Amino acid sequence: MDLYTRKSYWKWYLAAGAVLIIIVSMIYTKYLADQLIEREEQQAKLWAEAQRALNKVELDTFQFFHCDLTMPVKVLELNNTIPVILVNNSGQIEDALNVPGSEGRTIDTVRVRQELERMFREGIDSVDASIPPDIYKKVYFARSKLLGQLWWYPIVQFGLIAAFIAFGYIGFSTARRSEQNQVWLGMAKETAHQLGTPITAILGWIETLKAVNEERPDNQEMLDELRNDVTRLELVADRFSKIGATPELRTVNLYEELELCRVYMQRRSPRKVSFDFPDPNEYPPLLVDLNTPLFDWVIENLLRNAIDAMEGGVGKLSAIVSEEGRYACIEVSDTGKGIPSGKFKTIFKPGYSTKTRGWGLGLSLAKRIIEQYHGGKIYVKRSEIGKGTTFLVKVPKTR
Image (cartoon, helix red, strand yellow):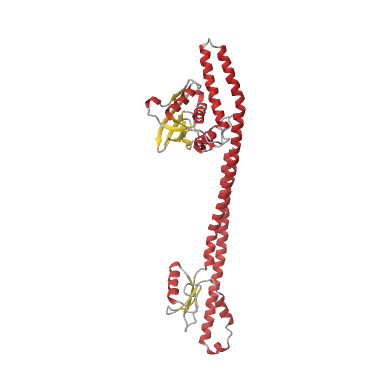
């Protein structure tokens, strides 16, 4: 299992853990809500009993003067959470608590009536507080605000957990990306430094060989091509040594730059690999701002990977240039073995490679060059196993 597969699994593990926490929280919240509903029903019934006790006293003059009303009054006063409305058989509101209009000493029956109608629409419970045959009353009660807030608890908890995971993931990703950038910077500069001496030595040996083979034109042509390779390597190494600094861009004709890449790569590719690139003479100039050594390296890297993916060194490489808004677009296609759809993004991650001896740095570096240095985009446009792949490279046009 590679690094990026494990990373993907960890994302799912975190998501599953968050969902599990929410499910457990919702189950426990429902349990608490059911307990609270039962308790509020008991309190509403107790409030109704207290009203019934007071009504009995009002009917019996002897009890009015000799009965202890401390308990019923205390029960009525202690209810400071459950909305209750006492209504007689004529529909008149006699008392109300914890509802709009019941705040003052005198009940605002209009507001309480509006609240009662709203409670009827939402569905409310009632408790009988009648004393037949003289008094018929009902106590209507709704759920307390505390119960309503309790239902929001899992949602708030989910939001906090999701925010914590998101911020944690962003923080770790930023730190890891910063560390990767430092590693890339050090690796690029160290590689450029290590290549400097051998490149200089090879150039010296090429000049020596040219002097020795002045009378052999075939060897001179071969040495010229070898010098072109080393010169190109020298340019790339020089640019890598300055990585982290703002690249120097110059305006070029995209068709001509692609043609240079084709000529260079075709001479170094198997003869059974055909190239189909646009001819610069057949199209009007398409001007873009490029750091040509790095851009050429990106195109060559795509072509080299495509050739490696061709079985038996047989296949076709093609490029199509188009314009899309402010971008110039290059589609680089091959007839290689293709890329699984699930790997379209993974192939650009540092360290990912399908080659036995690959380091997994080429496409990662290509993405960095196109997106960070040129303000463009690079991605897999389409791919089919056994038929080939098309990469799309976008770079801004010259304004």
